[in-house]
Image 1 (cartoon, one colour):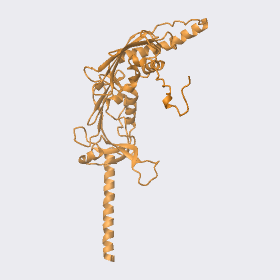
Image 2 (image 1 turned 30 degrees about the vertical axis):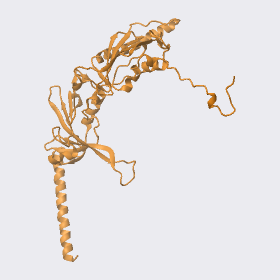
Image 3 (image 1 turned 90 degrees about the vertical axis):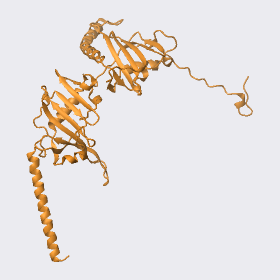
Image 4 (image 1 turned 180 degrees about the horizontal axis):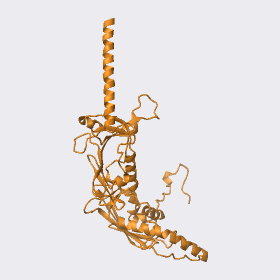
Amino acid sequence: MNRKQFLYLLAAVVILGGAGIAVFWNNLRGYQNDGATIGAKVLPQLKASEASEIHLKNANQEITLISKKGSWSVKERGGYPADLGQISELLAKLVEAKVTQSQQVAPSLYGRLELNEPGKTEGVGTVLDLKDQKGQPLAHLVFGKVAKKKDPGNPLPNAVDGVAAGRYLIAPGKIANVVVVSDPFENANPKPSLWLAKNFIKIDRLKSLASRSAKGSWKIARELEYSQWKFAATGGMLDPSAAGAAAKALGELEFIDVATEPKVEGENPVTLVADTFDNLTYTIKISKKKDSEDYYFNAVLTGQAPKTRTPEKDEKPDEVTRRAKEYQDTLRLLEARIEFEKILGQWTYVMSAKTLEALLKDNTQMLVQARKTEAAPSAAGMPPGMGVPH
């Protein structure tokens, strides 16, 4: 390369560098004009207390959360109570969300970042709409890909980015801007089952449990809360582990989803009646969901807790007084739980087979199974020189 060629190359570098700087400053001014300054809040005017409706939608699902008189519910699940903790977390994140990166992206390129709104064929993100009590819009956001960074625990130079570091989204402004916020917003998900309140029926202090199905019926009972379980009507020897597993399952009930079918009809129905020492009766209906491994579950609660406690035998006077006071302290909590569980009886739930396994046993499965006895060794199987003793 001669001197003249070198000077031409140097001039080209200067020109290109100057153009790059000019573009940088123009873009920076554009971000500032559009409210996308690094560190600025995405929704600076938003107040969480003003939100009365949250709508999330992607290419396959949508969810509408509605607040009335301070209680949130899930529209797509027949008004089932929503998870207040999830909602509070999402609203708090929206209020505090700040821009960590900002760039102008042509709408034709939104699909690469999964920022297209539902209706597009590909690259669809998750749309979030917030409304106030009057139905007026508070915010409209489109969440796209999760921004990832290299795992700090993997020192290899060829390590693939795999740790969630934020989320791409289209923020409101004069011109559509693509920004990255530091939170991945994992709960900005329109799957309805994720938003259902997880508080559920817990049947404790069980006094008796009866089962009825096409395969037969059985009933177990106990005199005191910590007494041994016995068959109340059927014969045979009760398997204590089977009885204990059934009682334990009623105290650890969890559901997957709330059924949305207008008429819930399952296969091989089983009816359970559970009576407790609190004078409560749960009538439970379980049936196999068609073309699925899951089950339908419904529990209707009747009865009310006694207002006073009945002393046990041989209680001393001071014990009677102390335990009566303790009962009154817990009665208010019990009555609130009863009221809530009676409301839950309005819906039918979807549960896994594992959750209900111990409650679906027939009468033969509740019996102690006879152990196979080992056959005595025959003379033919003895080593040479040994015989069967007389």
